[in-house]
Length: 147
Image 1 (cartoon, rainbow, N blue to C red):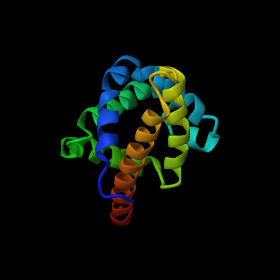
Image 2: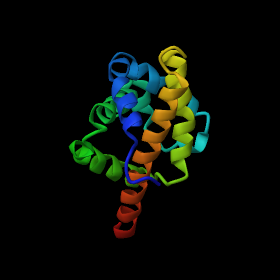
Image 3: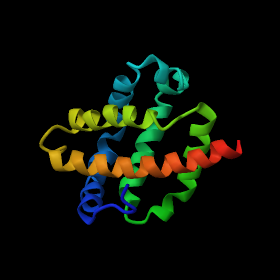
Image 4: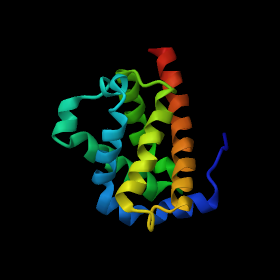
């Protein structure tokens, strides 16, 4: 794993901020529709928060926050800590992260279209997602050890 993101990835991900601000909930709603084809993963989520749109809105805000702060990740320390606590509470494990990526990246393209969600954009988001996933996995492993 790289200890930092490439400058081009940072620039591309930051540039998606306006599209995420406008279409973030549509992206996360499409992502959850894909993700929940896996019943095991679906069972990990509060379905009431899905039905009322709270979870897609929360994730959309988190993704936007990541995009806007990808060059200053320290600004996300509080959000990351809350996410780690929630993930440990619900039993998220490293093997779940690729499933989310496999749902998120196509949802970005599906929602924004190929003109906006180019291969370069999806590649940058794949790198950025993997980078954040590795941070979360490491922090969650430490939390599981002390739980």
